Length: 56
Image (cartoon, rainbow, N blue to C red; front, side):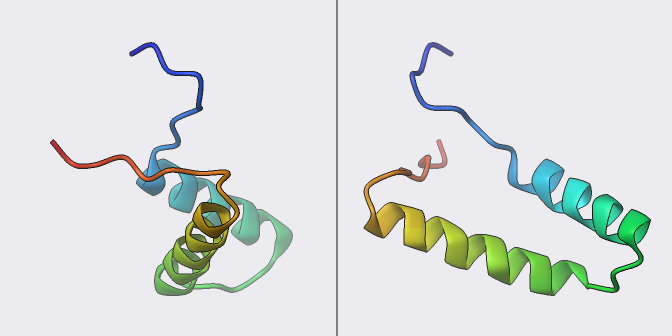
């Protein structure tokens, strides 16, 4: 895949955040992280910084 924008695997990012929160002693659930990431993506889309990939 030759693309000038980085691709971030959603589940990998959620797992990373859960792991890092646990290391820091922060209690957060998967649903909350997914909501925050969804809102973050919407914000980035509004700013023209991110474009969602279409499922093939």
